[in-house]
Amino acid sequence: MSATANFKGILGTKLGMTQVFDEHARVVPVTVIQAGPCTVAQVKTAERDGYPAVQLAFGEVKARKVTKPRAGHFAKAGIEPARHLVELRTALAGDYSPGQELKADVFAPGDRVDVVGVSKGKGTAGVVKRHGFAGLSASHGTERKHRSPGSVGACATPGHIFKGMRMAGHMGHERVTMLNLEVVKVDPERNLLLVRGAVPGPKRGLVMLRTSVRSTQVQAGRPREVRG
Image (cartoon, rainbow, N blue to C red):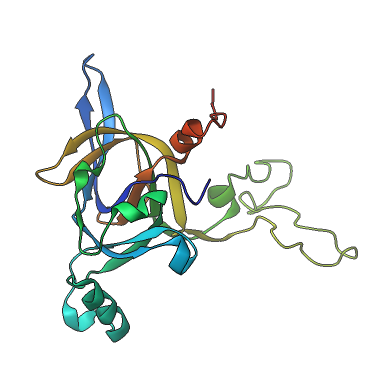
């Protein structure tokens, strides 16, 4: 992915899933996202900052809950304090200005987007749930160990477990990106975006929508990845 790609983007909140019907009366599962309104807090340039980017502020927050450095950052841009501040690298940064407001009509029906969010936390999970292990045999002497991982390494040589071994542990609550999803419908009046399929995170979780990486690769003449 090029850092200078012509990305567009907006922050939003995942509201949940529903379904709509297309022009052929087929059911289309969609995720409803409250997209924006976002405010531009800062515009970065390659000459001054080393790369072009735009900072988007989103979400209401009480002024007393904002730290002094961040409050000064918002005051410099002349905007109200926001709960979230996320940066989007784009070659189109020069088209934005501090204080500019972005709404759901940044995207149009049919656009391809990547949705970035934090997945649901599932706590501590075993190897069967976390990594899809099959577990041990259901018979032939296995006793109260059916969902264990089995051997994780030799005893004397090397005498330790290699880094990266798939084992039980914390599952979920990590950054996840869903690639190349279709924008099915846009409601600019209510700042709603309907995106085909599921997106990461719980309800009311923060998500970021940006122009699909694959669509920018196609525009740049790169081969498009096709999955059967």
